Image (cartoon, rainbow over the protein chains, first blue to last red):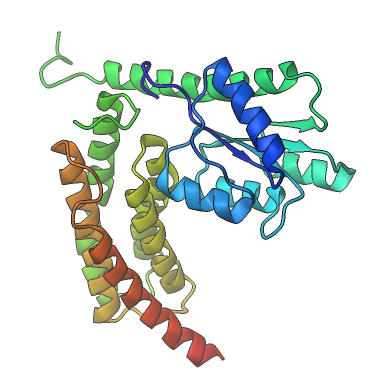
Length: 149
Length: 140
């Protein structure tokens, strides 16, 4: 992402109150959030239109749940980082999240936002690290004539 | 070059690499009509679309991703022998390839991905859907 632009997040939850609360907090922390999907299907519609760095998604949602959303994201947008937030936890859905490549899983209710902030920061850093490597690679590529000393 | 929130140098690099990877695809597609059962040929054609599909969104090229995905699906059907390599199918793939290059040209000259694109994409999707409908009918 360009340095002057904020990392873009997508918060997916069927409870508007949770979406609003997380969006408000994370905007103040320095992220851009300008969408409001209530389930996996709506999230995929947003992803087809907007470049997003990190998706934060609930698991239990109507139409398309968070694990299916994670699976679709990793298939179609493999570089997007996905953080799972869930109040309904069992070993199966936690292992599903892990197996399908979630960056982190955070249990609801989220009483302390520090864990989520850290997870988002790590996910953004992960992408920034790759971006940096790509920049190094581009810088290392000699332009015509430069490779002969 | 338009700012997609990605370093313009990186975007230019991605476009250049994508163009290079697609360069041999036109002639491979035409060859494929003559040798439709050659797995190496179909894999060579499939690979650049798969890579572009997976990476384009990271560079903000969402239409490129959408189009590469569609072409990948079409080629996957050929790879699985669910779709024959007819001239119509080759034409759809070649049109898609031209559209990808046109989008790269637009972005490189500072325009958006969208110029004149949606109608063409819709047409391509409809053509592909016709092919898929024929398969479903055949399998059903």
